[in-house]
Amino acid sequence: VISLHDSLFKLTITKLNLEDSFSEEFSLLAIHTDLEDFRLAYFLNKTLGLNLSRKEFDLNFIDSKGNFSVFEYIDEDSYLKWNLISNIYNHNFTTNINSNDLFELSNELVKKFNLLSEYKNVNFLLKLENNENQVDLEDIIKEIKNIPQIITLYNINKDLKNKENLIFL
Image (cartoon, rainbow, N blue to C red; front, top):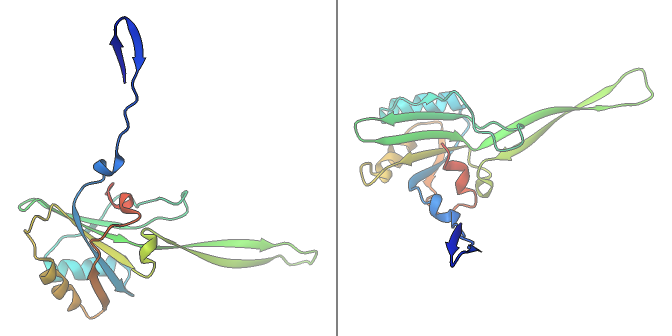
């Protein structure tokens, strides 16, 4: 910010606290399951009366190597926004081993990426925005736990290291 004072230019430096811009409140549930993303979205829709559908884009934070699927439902009546986000992306790539042999060997390698690195074993995240006591999270957790393919589910509304990864949804 530059201000004019006594006919001299004075440079004033203003620091912005980025924590304030990430202050969006949301509830976040961690889901452990072997279900594929579209199957989990189907069961959540059926169980909770939602209409989660796959977004046109995936989240990509890993130099174009990892895409995390995103499903979204916006409840117009209660102004709630639901997001189902994959927390794990397995990137398959092949490395060629060159030898002086007639045959070239190749190795298939899998590299695992996590959206939230502090929750490496969580398969999916269910994010609920604008929930100002409109939905009882404990009731939601009980209902989701009734889905037979859900291994475990819990609330992770703590300070997240990578909270900014969830703000842009």
